[in-house]
Image (cartoon, rainbow, N blue to C red; front, top):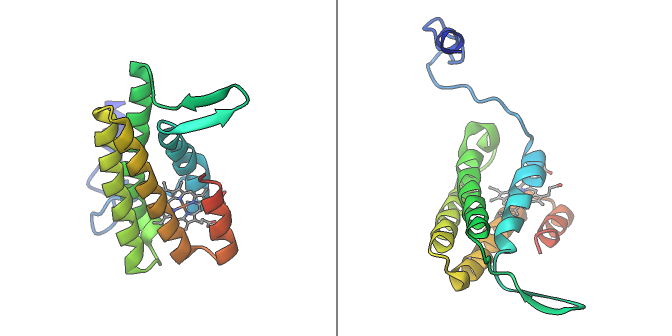
Length: 157
Ligand code: HEC
C-alpha cells in the first residue's frame, strides 16, 4: 500500500496536474451528490428536532440516545464538508461567484448545526435546521430552472 501511494505521488506527475495542483475525480454529478448525499444527510439533521404527528399522537424528534445525537452531529459535519466540496472546481467550475457564496453559507450553517448537536441543544438544532433549509433554497433558486427548484425544495420538507 505504501509503495502504491508513493508511486502515485511521484514527482513525474501521477495524481498531480502539470502545475502541481491536485486533480479531483468527479465521482458524482451535482444531481447525484444532492440526491445521494446532501438530501439524505440533511434529512437526518432535520429529523432530529421538532415534532411529528401520526395516528398515535405527537412525537418529539429530539434524539434520546448518545447514538442518536452522534448521528445528528455527523449529519451536520457532513453538510459542512459538502459545502467545502461544492466550492472545489469539481462543482464550482463554470458557475458564478455566488456559487461560492452559497457553498460557503452551507459550510457556515453546517458548523452552527454541528455546534448545536454537540451541545445537544434541541431548540438550536431546530432553528439552525430552518436556516439550513434557506441556504439550500437560495442556491436552488439561483441555479435550478424554476420548476426543478420547486421540486428540489419540496423534497426537503
Ligand atoms: C451551492 C449550490 C447548492 C446548494 C447550497 C444546495 N444545492 Fe441542492 N442542488 C444544486 C444544484 C445545482 C442542483 C441541480 C442538479 C442537477 O439537476 O443538475 C441541486 C439539486 C438538488 C436536489 C434534486 C436532486 C434530484 O434528484 O434531481 C435536491 C433534493 C437537493 N438539491 C437538495 C439540497 C439540500 C437538502 C441542500 C441543503 C442542505 C442543497 N440541496 C443545497 C445546488 C445546490
